[in-house]
Image 1 (cartoon, rainbow, N blue to C red):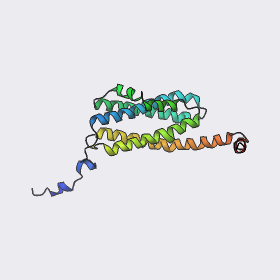
Image 2 (spheres, one colour; image 1 turned 180 degrees about the vertical axis):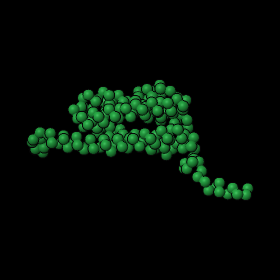
Image 3 (cartoon, one colour; image 1 turned 30 degrees about the vertical axis):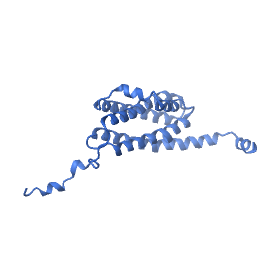
Image 4 (spheres, helix red, strand yellow; image 1 turned 135 degrees about the vertical axis):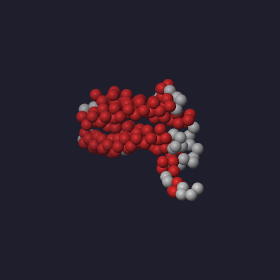
Length: 191
């Protein structure tokens, strides 16, 4: 094969690494994609239900933006779920268990600070970690449509965490300023 040695030097598999690992089964992929879709579906409801309750205008704008992003993500994940031979019922089934209870707790959190803590110190970091785990376990060539979708979602989620943490810091500072005088003294003198 004269003159074709350069072919071995070309990037293999479009530059994807890890193509030699077995990865997750289609059923495992569908189960995890259903969980991701469930989180996004419920996140839309959380943002819609909570938006009118908050007086912080910037938080209202952020919730509206994130609601739109979550709806787009949910739609994309739902489409991918169908490609993985699953359906919408898998998403609803996931919400019947602990994940649904957890998301309900965030939905019913009492104030802006508690909502932001639930979202940006618990839910979104755990969601990002779950996506990262999925990406490290799946077969990147065979499951490329999911990998591509989750990488774009992960990028937006990481931006969301950074911005959300700014909300948490400011709202925590506001809560400390609003603390009634002497409340620390009452606690300290109780012992």
